[in-house]
Length: 338
Image (cartoon, rainbow, N blue to C red; front, side):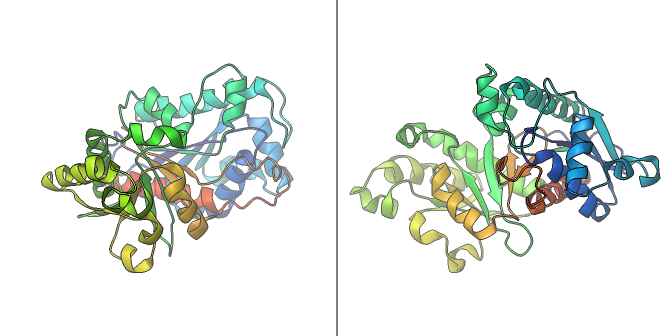
């Protein structure tokens, strides 16, 4: 991973993309920075989005955006104006703004690759709107991998504060029928290598321990309920262990997520999206975050969607975005100190 090019004493530069303009991203960005920017005295923030839209949504939820970004605020929060392609109304999707959302993301990625930004934090986007705009799009994670030419990335969701549960995924946005074929020994070994590396270098964990689920009920029941554990997962764990990675399993997913098993674990690797994430989100929703591991840049995000029904109402909770910013700042600190 390429270290930060910023001088040691310079403020960390954090970019925030405001995501789907009809969703809660613009207002949550304003709320999160108004509530918590002082928590990160070593960071400066660049907000990417339509300036008038952000100001309008901030006002709707009681945030004085002009004061927050003005000269008297010390210049710690800056607005990088990217104009909407069409007017946006809270709660109403418009495919005309699908490419606008990707433009925000592209500016953030380009800035991070150029070392202008130490990390990027992404507010939620609406996949359907981007696809309706004529752009094939699976998700943030896959797009980041493509734009940074990264052959393999790992999606990890994590609780923060008093609930530091971390769950990484061996596969991401795949139909369930395709998961088994997507699991390979080489792929799992590389996934475990990425998890081990990033937990060491970005989270400051000197000797990460990763618990790995099986794919099938009861982890295959010695082959009676499936052979993926025997043919793929166990050999991958053996190779990872030989490479110095502390990865253990495969464990039955229905019993692994208990405090007595998790208390000494730094991460759980689940085989597919809905195997691990329902547990994580039940335990940490509102405080959880999404981190993309394996990238040459640092990227964190919220653990929720665009919440169109809450957009513009002031009822959406900025807790997850605050946690995502906090983690991005922490990861950037670890990278700079490396």
